[in-house]
Length: 123
Image (cartoon, rainbow, N blue to C red; front, side, top):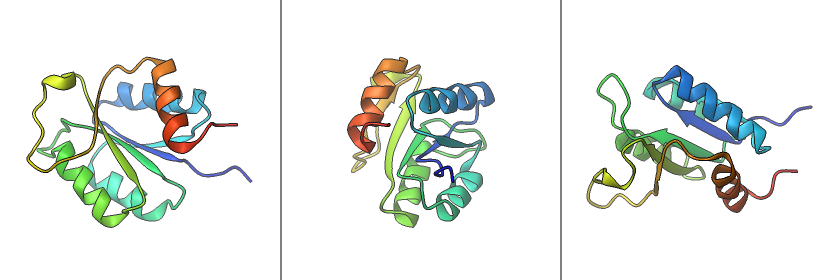
């Protein structure tokens, strides 16, 4: 039996979702993807294997990645949430928000190190 995904990738850009999903799989950490808030919350609730969420800061439909990160944390406190942004460190965080913001694109080797350090070495 194949284990379920460890990572939930939330991005409204289909190409970026696919690339990030493939990159996570290439590092040995299987992922599932969501295009929006509702899908992300549903997957987080149903898939107990998810241990980390990579959430785009700017999502379509008026959804803030910061708000979604808070919702995921409330629903599943065991999921570590990291934010992704094409704006890098130039994005301003809401007061009291403590999740790291990673710049995208994230080079594959950097992604591998990040995932291995937080989820354990894939093997």
